[in-house]
Picture 1 (cartoon, one colour):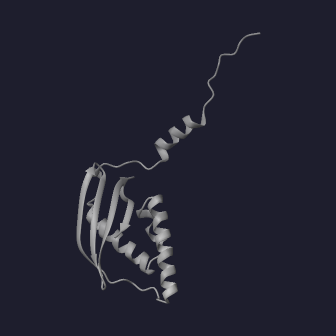
Picture 2 (tube, rainbow, N blue to C red):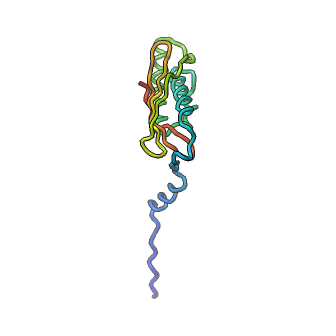
Picture 3 (tube, rainbow, N blue to C red):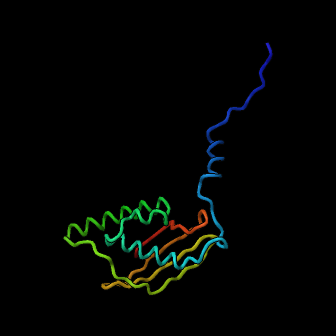
Length: 144
């Protein structure tokens, strides 16, 4: 009886690694990305509109990573509950962006603070952007 040569079985980890090379978000260097400032301004306006109830959080899904999106959903639900408890209707916020400051701690990464003046107070929005698949995406957001 002839012996069959040993064939190494494929492990699922080997296949997952190969798939992630093709289907996972691909990092993009800063030289291939647009100026982040307009994106930071639009994202900040969108986040403030979500918290005020004037915009659905799903409209920001393409601009943020999954983890940041989950946090936005939680915060948006808390804001909706607070408005409901006080009996305040959702309305479009009136804000003006006072300044945008950003720095690049690594290639394809931008950390920024956007200062926004509203009718009642001035707030800061801290954002971390990373270049993924040829565009900026927010990986972290904090409304201060």
